[in-house]
Figure 1 (tube, rainbow, N blue to C red):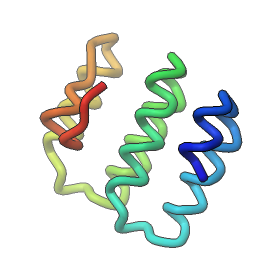
Figure 2 (figure 1 turned 45 degrees about the horizontal axis):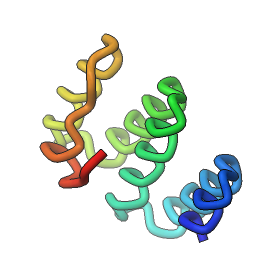
Figure 3 (figure 1 turned 30 degrees about the horizontal axis):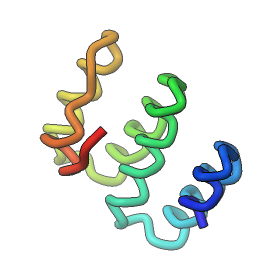
Length: 88
């Protein structure tokens, strides 16, 4: 459903579906990754950062995400291949 909303350029609905997915299964790393990518592609860095912060609350041992987040916060690029294994 999130993909359909994204295809329809409905960022808020897509984000809502992804947040619901995270609420239902907080261990689903893919849902956090998709939420980050949704906001990143929409050039909404603040909400992308919030998605990563939420991810790190659940997975604090993921040091690669933490490192990439600091780079992203500083205005750098986030390496999706190193972290979530995804392509931008």
